[in-house]
Length: 323
Length: 291
Image 1 (tube, rainbow over the protein chains, first blue to last red):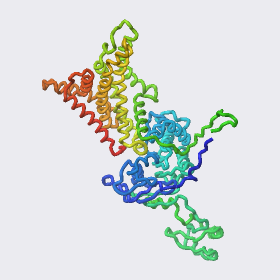
Image 2: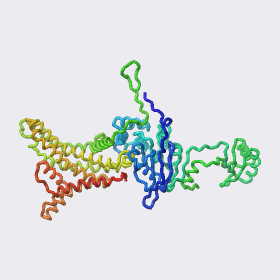
Image 3: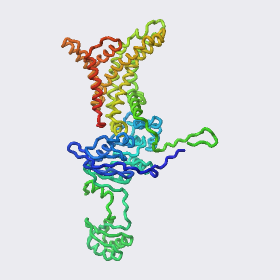
Image 4: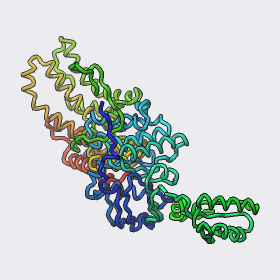
């Protein structure tokens, strides 16, 4: 039996999935991309941003559907304008909007697109079976797409993006419009692409949780510029600095706590939000905090790591003000 | 693949259908375009679709082939009939007879080749990762030509082949009439190219099928009325050369029977419509935008 190897562990990572160097694109009065310079180097990168931030414009420019006014855009090390044909061959694309012929079956859609991308008929049929199996559509593959649920249509769009064995897939809002069950299935499939199948992924989304669950890195756009770029995994340091918020007299609580923690080498400092900042949080320190709060009858409202989480970074970068 | 040890041929084959990377060699782009042409020809005919979607196109095909098949069948089935099929109906007459069927076929099949892709918004898939706009335009134009050749050239070839089959001396008949074949193909091409260009040009202007069909029918149905009114008003025949319905058929007839034909103006109109139609199509899709 032929067994699929795990390409993710054997493949040379090669050039980054996408590189933008000073890319600008204007539509009339709207500056959709503004001198954007960013490199998508992770196996799976999430592209986040509010409506109008430039996510779709960037994906469309990467695919050659619109040409940047200035700057250089490279996909897998290939220029998206000069090496258009090779980019087309090595990239798969799943648009956000409905884009499937309603009267064709998922099988016919995938076979046709595989053939258009250069596969012979036999290879196209074989690979169509593989991708439809991979996205869980093998039982329904002969029904017209128009009779599919939204989730099945999304999976068909994903299947056609994979059928020619691309090195990179661009997913535009892959969970858009899906019910909770469909969303769970789609997220699981998208995660498999980079972790098990060795396909680089760039996924745009409005939903941070989707990106956290499927990507290794997040790129945040705001008004066509790079607002933030960082890894999704946050390595919280156990026993690291924490922020403490209590009921009642916070200053008095801090004054009472400080001499108790001094022998442990822990210092206290007020935070910008008026909480008590502790320089460390070993079990012994947390026990002392608990005991003091119980002794004084003070409630502990908030005790969280001081390190900023992904959500904080993303929300700040998107310019969203939380109430 | 698993084999039983000690046997030459496998008793059972296991296929691993899990997703794997594709490392095969890609075909040349011409293979992709020919696949696109084949698919674009199948769709308007309802092939690989529901039975209902095959009814109308195959009714029209049957109507187009019926006259040719009938005049071939009569001498074949009734030996007492001494006439050749081409004596029962000539190539120009067959072309004229099929004109109405052709207009109906073009209206239902050709503009929708473009409107359907825009309605389904499938162009973003094609232009992003599958086809260049040039390949799309060339493939669609070729598919339209092949489709219309089924209706225009097919019956003429049936008549030609039927005449060979019913001739007393098929070899001699073929030798005497082989020169008709290039004229038949050229005449059919004149009609096919005209209506393919016109149908695709109209179809490229809108994403609504009903508007595209209506636009094409407006040109081919209202055009003759206008040209005849003009001819009456001006008391001259030259406006008839502008008729988009009979013009290409008259040109084809001139090629088939070697007559003078409708004149230079009809050739100019034909050239303008064909060049302009395909030019408009290319302009509409140039740049690869899916808008």
